[in-house]
Amino acid sequence: MIGLSRQDRQAGIGLVEIMVALVVSSLLIGGLIQIFSSNKQAYILQDEMSRLQENGRFAFHFLMKDMRMAGYFGCRNNVPVQNNLDTSDPAYDNAAYDFAGAPLVAYNADGNGGWSPSLPASIQALEPLPGNDIILIRSADAGSVNLTPPYQSGDAQKASIHLEQDHGLQKGDIAVVSDCSRATVVQITGEGGGGTSAAVTNNTGSTTPGNATSELGANYGDGAIIAKIQSTVFYVANNVNNEPALFRKNLTSDENAEELVAGIDQMSLRYGLDSNNNRELNSYVEAPTASQLAEVMAVRVSMLLRGERQNIVDDGQSFVLDGDVISRDDGRLRYVVSSTATVRNRAP
Image (cartoon, rainbow, N blue to C red; front, top):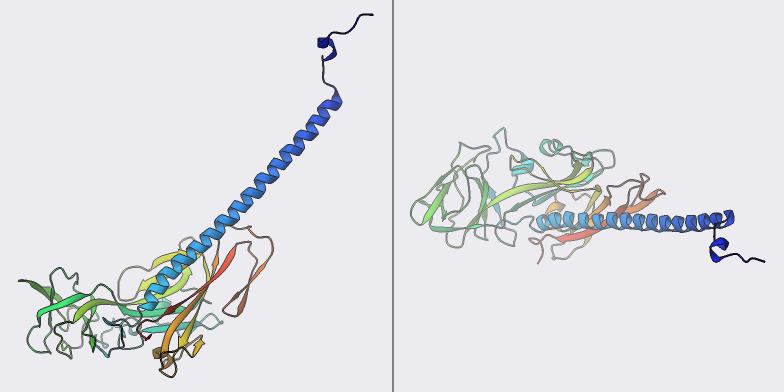
């Protein structure tokens, strides 16, 4: 009997072997696809969450910085303010220029597509999204300039103010002069120089809204400073991509509103009051009255952030934002963040 060689015995692969190999390969490939898909979904979810947290940090960076400075007019205390701006000028906007008023103004979304109190025309023109609270903050820039001898030309009623060279102020700037016991808000109407100091003037006319008087109302001298002053409004509006975003606009400037952070689905503000003037918080309110604005010691900001990608989550979601339940079902990842800023010029 003639035996088969090794080569003859291994000449082919049967159908059974092929089917087994295909099944095993399919299982391996399916497992790899499942692992890849799960890892990709986990990465996308983690990336979206990281972006939301980063957006929250950026939003609070801008908001907290300006809220802490509300009412800062050169010193960390409440000083009487004389506002020299011309209220009779047609370009005068009370929201932008009422620096003798409250250091911050709260516009609370009333749930009916409006705000309480009603928005002034300058803020309404920014097209804020209904349902989101708005805050207006008035303060001086931290970068101040010292007055130098002879401080003021002539007596206390003269318009020229002498400053350090390279002071950075320009014609048309709104500025506050302060010596920690009083403050005067003026619009710079001209610049001069020479010697070891420079001078700015705050005469009537030649600027808009201009000054109603050139009298400073005080004899500012050694230790006095001057700084630009501004009214800044923070609000939520649609950006160029039709996504809700946090915006900032300086109402005393002609510059366009600045988009800060995208993906702000909703913003809610609460105000901590010191109602008995003992430098301690007594309560939080949604919409402080005009008389309560002077009692605000802290502002709590809560935001519902939303991600860029759709179909990240399958089911509808519900969130609690300042006690209100908000439901969303568009498949976007969302995240609630909250932080509180102390209004330093009201704190002890």
